[in-house]
Image 1 (cartoon, rainbow, N blue to C red):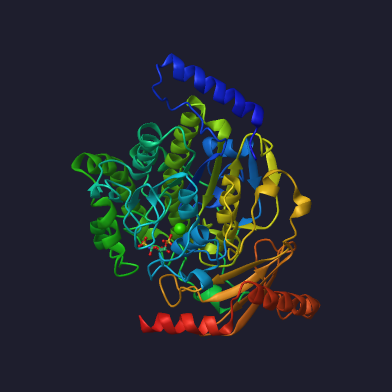
Image 2: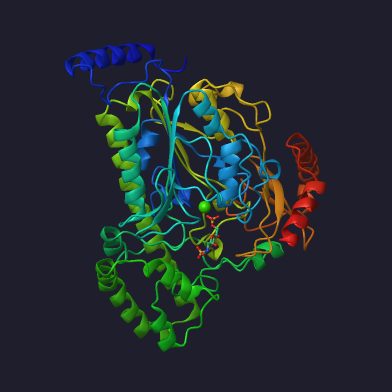
Length: 542
Ligand code: SGN
Ligand code: CA
């Protein structure tokens, strides 16, 4: 039993009183009778920890997300095992690394014959629902209710694939709509007598970063501090960093990302960054209703006019700086709505007396570059994309305002949630339950290294295939397929990871030790050269 008994008893008594008072009409204020906790798993898409003020507040204040940490626990060393959307979600659902669950990249659909933790929760009597972005290429099993965005989804007037109504389109802003659906389900569909598992999974702040009107109006006028490595020239690293196509100046779309109107690009003679630069703009901004578009133009129109005046005399450095600011205005503006809406859900839990018996987890499917190394996007084992935010609140179990710096991974979420629900964990899951860490029992935690493996190459952003091991002190990565390069970073001496010390004789012993450990981890997690080759073949055959 993991909950506060005296509270449960009290809640049960209150529920009984309310029931009598309401002439036996069930009300939503009742707790599940058996004391099993409710679980709300909040995930946003591409939300960098650098953009959560519980971690650092130089970019944005996120008071609602921060509440989860101030009333719960902030994990400062949480990471993913494969820094890309659908693969990360597949790791989360199955509790298995990508090479075993088979969802190595965004291209092939998820294999739904596998056992996922929501299915196990459902079998154990949990009510289950998911709203928002899943990105599996098929519908999820194990959910009583789902309303998911097709593929990446859109910011304005999004389509949803729903369990009961087929495909629907809803007018409005996606972050608000996903929250409305979540609150509707809690209020109208949920059976108050049974515990629930709810996946509340935002599309924001994924590219193309379109904020809601109430936020773009404000954020377009903001200026943000530049990261120290914005003008990184990738010296001191291998070919992977040099060849990646994630640079703000050279790889970001002018229309799709920076919101320069296609006709303004033509007027200024700016070519498309990629073939779908203008198409991405049309796909997103083109979905707006005439009213939404008029509001958009009232704010982005003057920005375009201003850009037209500046552009002809801008240096390359100034262009980079301009693009960084534009990027941050829209990326952070999109997060402002996520934070507000997380506040709506937390308030609902408070108002309904549900907060006490609900585990709330906030995370992202991976981290993201906010101009560090001159980049946007993710994929790399390097710090900003490898790390992911993780905040958890569970009254009576997690000490409010606590912090944890153990190396935990998205691989651990399935087992953690099953453990919280008192459901037996399948023996082939590969993570660890975080519940001992929630309880502050760090002595039971003996992981000192995590394993990482990224596959999607050659593909958008051109980040080479690599696998590696990360300890608190070091990061060793092997880039393969069209190269055979090793990189070692001293995380304590060089937190920005600017210098590959793999060939430095001073680190020769560390390299040997880490290579041995990495080989052990590959065996432990059942990854191998054969599997690397198998996935390369599969990729080439498609
Ligand atoms: C799209 C994006 C990429 C992004 C991938 C994967 N381009 O292709 O920038 O890396 O999704 O993102 S876009 O302009 O078409 O949006 S993920 O979150 O699904 O992994
Ligand atoms: Ca993502």
